[in-house]
Image 1 (tube, rainbow over the protein chains, first blue to last red):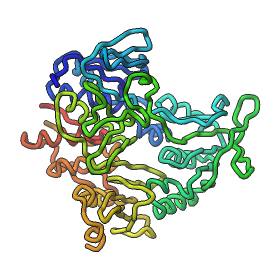
Image 2: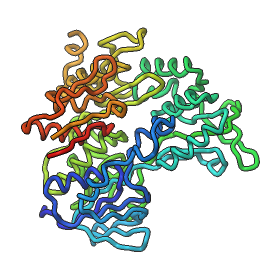
Image 3: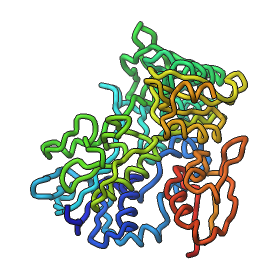
Image 4: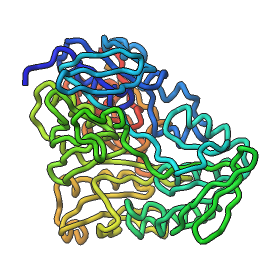
Length: 395
Length: 65
């Protein structure tokens, strides 16, 4: 592949901005255009459900990169403009302002959009959380509310439930799983997480589906559950996961069944790479992955940029995520799953500080810690080195 | 080159320690970043830059050349 001279990055958040920076760092001197659907300068998302929602940080603190470093990119910024179509044959990108951008290298980093319930989102007091605007609106709503139902006990739902309790609200957390994040952290850790929330006064409704939102005069007033119960609420956060933002790629020829399908080098088509939440790629060890976590946006943005400039290395990271809830920090390195085996190898859950390993097929696939951050990092090597399970858990 | 860390923003991921253990460490009790030297010698610059770029909390700032 010849080196491109005209690169367009679609998506001006963490993955897209990182890719743009990596392109320049790796010597790309051609024309560079960043297209971002939001009008705001790029910003960071993890603090939205934590520091921003709590009011500990002001919005300016989540801006990504300093103004000078963004200016130094020498890029043409198209903020407030969305990509609306892609012609991979003609190598042209269509924009919402009617413009067309030709490219010979394209980075797709459009992220994800929150999934919504089939109905009820038109009611006042019903929120989703993805953008900074969403976070500020949710904070304003929480400050005025007395009771909140959080629909979905994933990372976002559990973090928001914790913040809402800290703000003194009555909180109900509804989720179809038997305990929060069972599918990601396994039964044991998930039960501890359920206990943490219950101990802080959250009403947990596990194994429960929301069948509808109820309202009065255009304002939400509660949630109907399967089984017939009704939980009153003056604010509802719907946090039932996200879908890759690939609607604009319909008809492009790219496979977008679950995100932009890429090979092991983040390549979706000749001259087209993808990175971040939207990208599904073939991890050499873990198989097909799509990772909606902050570190991956950085690592994959960098990797995708290198591929675009001719790099041949497969993208084979040890994925990482963390979540902060009340005074607990959970960190996970690697790939976990509800079906993986789990063993505590340091500390003690009874003391509120422990670390453990996840294993599958006789090898370590993940390492986690609950208020033992250093140990998580130290255990990570078992994931990176694919340590046999028996050796890692008996040593 | 001068390195500063923002311990309030730090999330204790330890990515900086993984790529540049000569400059960064983590507190035992909460994993928050500790700077071992704030003016690393030239040979460490690449590692420090990598740590700053990787930090998921953007808690590492470099200044000077």
